[in-house]
Length: 455
Image (cartoon, rainbow, N blue to C red; front, side):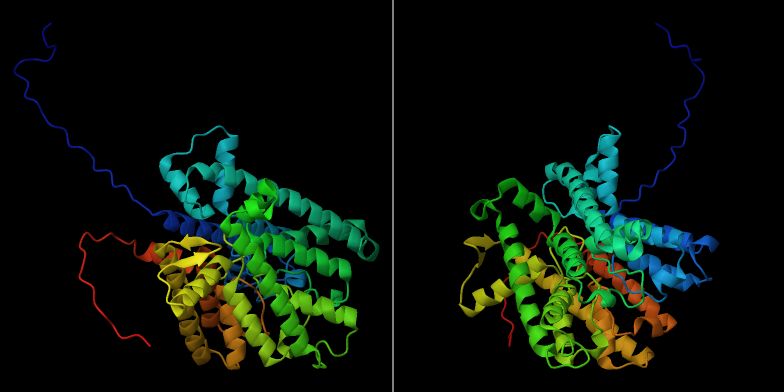
């Protein structure tokens, strides 16, 4: 068959358009996703009907960032400054930031029958903290299911608790807002004094603490407990998180009760029952919950130093809590113990922890400490505040805790911007930020060993 083109027509190579493809790492996609959510929240909070009085762009940005990063630090009062629409926006931002926007994206794609590509699976894997791509879908569904069930129970219990005091409609609204805020470890409250009026209320204390302790344990742990229901069958990670949570909470409870028992500004004037409730609440809330029933500025310096440590540790991985995470803290302790005992391997529950995991824990802790030191140094220059107040604010922001000794509302513009950066860094994770700034490359060269003096 002859070619239909004329024989004397020269062939011309058409220029091909160069398509530049921007390759972003999974942490970068997550970072831009959170920033986009913060921007959307900022714009919504700037709407005239979102507030009872006009707020500045920086105040809206700070509030949106605090909500998306589930921190709870505020520069304007949530209950009086924002309308119900504004408060609902804050609640939705907390929910989206707490459970993670990738969880919603994965479940939405599955519900619509869409196939998730390898790159999207990688991003979801990074967001959900999973090493197996096959588990991403299962975990994403379980996260939403568990969150929905637990939050429904929380709303019901808090509504029943506040019904006689506030009336049904107001109790339901408060129950909804505080459940979202507590389960996601956000710490946003509808009154300027947080939950201090309910320091002696057994139902409020037990319900709120149960919500943020369960939210802070981690969904992987909750799924594992439901699946196996016997201590011997639980994974090593689950055993570590549950045992560490129990021991840290009990130790913190005992120490705070002991340290504040003779403090007339906190526990001394309370009954034994109220002392127990208040000490328990202040012991567990630094695990990034952000609520308080006592004034931290009135507590002893020793209690505040203990709170700094608790905020730095945080909760479990793949949870609504932040901090360096319980697993990281345990690995660091066991690595130190192994070194002191002259052991070559780090072991937990008769299982060996891989060296890369130990290095990751060490890097995460060191990056966090460096960020804390630099931030405290900068704020001591720009803010006229006691060193303890500055350190408390910085650790609270990086750990996305939300507790404050009263400095947040007094921060300068630079101080607010720095706290915003810390909240975002703390939520995304220092290592994720480092990955975003400089993606590591494997070296093909193996260098000779050397000795450097340590200690």
